[in-house]
Image 1: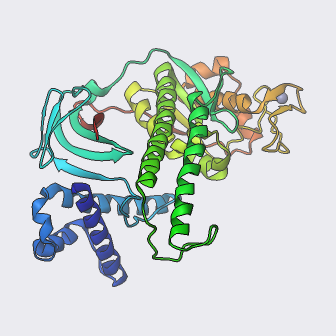
Image 2: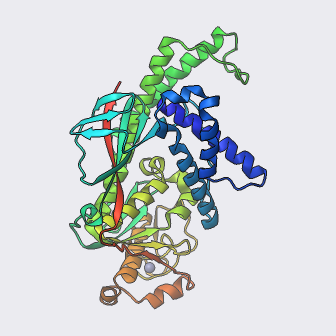
Image 3: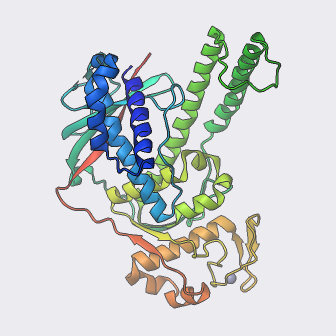
Amino acid sequence: MASGTARFTWNWALAEWNRQFDAGQKPTAATLKKEFNAIKYKEYPWLTDIHRDAHAEPFTNLAKAWVKFFRDLREGAPAHAPVFKKKGKCRDSFYVANDKFKVNGTEITLPIVGKVQMTEELRFKGKILGLTVSRSANKWFASIQVEMLEEQALRKRTGHNTEGVDLGITAAAALSTGEKLIAPKPLKAVLRRLRIRARGLSRKLESAKVRIGIKPGQKIPKGTKLPVSNNRKKVAAVLAKTHYRIACIRSGFTHKLTSCLCRENQALGLEDLNVKGMLKNHRLARAISDVGMGEFSRQVKYKARLYGTKLVIADRWFPSSKMCSICNFVHSELKLSDRTWSCPNCGTIHDRDINAANNLKRLATETALPAASNAVMRSTDALQKVSGGKVTPVSYDPVCKKNQGRKKNVHFYAHSE
Ligand SMILES: [Zn+2]
């Protein structure tokens, strides 16, 4: 009910935003909220039964969504304007401010819902800022925001290597150590089950169509509602659980990969993931592509900060795949389908992904650790000459300010229906 309210408010705010924006006005979260508060109990009396935060927070979130949209537009990244939320098609969630709930050990007291058991205690000490309750398949999660000191959040690095990582087409990731990481094994089995269960649901939909007189294969006219049988509900719930399990396996894989990379290295060479994501996202290995390049790069960035790892990100002009990591020759005829190639200049036989990872590693070494690089690596001059002087690596220095409060999201498996 509270998540429905959050959805309703979001949609109201977005519609009003669009209307005002088209009329040449400049809507803000604060003005919209004011307008909504002025009319809400008169026009939507049922709102009185719901705690306030569920219909206050969507305004803040909408403002954030617009800020992100305009920032992405400016930076040339793929930008998505906020869209309307549809019942059953969106993530069910709502926000509760810190004065409305209590955490006591593994027990959490929510407004209206009451006491709920969590699967584990809050692991972080600090001031509790707020809580977001959300649903995935049949599970509800409580994500608690805790403000804590930067030092408490920092992690200790276990290794001080430098590695290049090429996010893969065939393997999920190729490392400059020569390792190739492939997608987790259980994924294949679950994907098979997903196909079977999806077929089961589509059979139920087909028979529902027949029942109201639409021929199989014929399109459903807009606005028609299919009768929902109990069996269809059951199959749909099982399918949602399967989707959820797959999402867990994938996100677990990405989390382990990014943690491992940041924990064991003092510098990492990566490609500009935005560009790479745009160019060949459809070809990326399943495990990463479905978690999303954005998610991978988000995780790498915040974990690099926690472990004090330097990220060196090669821009789109860096010929990571086409350059021979031994002699710097740029093999411009290299096709995307060439998995291995031999260098026309020095004859070295390269694995495409490992070679790219090696080039990224060298870039990281030269950019992040200039003192060490002279002894170990060939000079940067050669690198720049070869690639037309367009190597402009961006280095993100993990600068940590002391005593700066930061937000920490903690996910808990709260309870299952
Ligand atoms: Zn060569």
